[in-house]
Length: 69
Image (cartoon, rainbow, N blue to C red; front, side, top):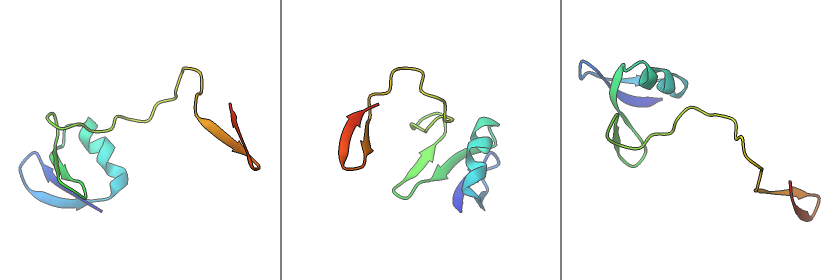
């Protein structure tokens, strides 16, 4: 559960899975991370997950060997 502050400045607990939708629909002004409050429109927040379109550069482990994908 995550503490949020709604547009009417009331605080409440919401399920973590609802947070992205509430941010996208402008229903909240802030939420609490483990270390600090995050103000929507001022602080950096993660965007929705998208597929990476470029060449994969991360290493992948196959058995005991490292290789590039």
